[in-house]
Image (cartoon, rainbow, N blue to C red; front, side, top):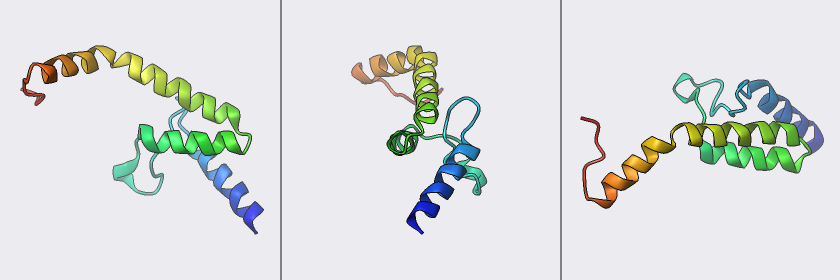
Length: 90
C-alpha cells in the first residue's frame, strides 16, 4: 500500500509540475495555483530522494532563474530597508 501511495504522489507531482520547473502549490485550489519557494524546495528534496532527480533539477533551475530575474528588485528593497525607508509600493 505504501508503495502505491508513493507512486501516486510522484505521478501527481510530475503531472502538476509547470513546464518552467516550478511545482504548483495546489492544483485543486485556484488561489494557490502558483509556486512557493519553500514548499517547492521540500517537494524537490522529496523527488530527489525517490530518484526523480530530473524533476528536482528543473525546479532548482526555475528557482535560480526566478531569483536572478528579480535580483535588482531584491537588492533595491534591501537597500531601502537598511536606510529605514518604506518598502510599500507608491
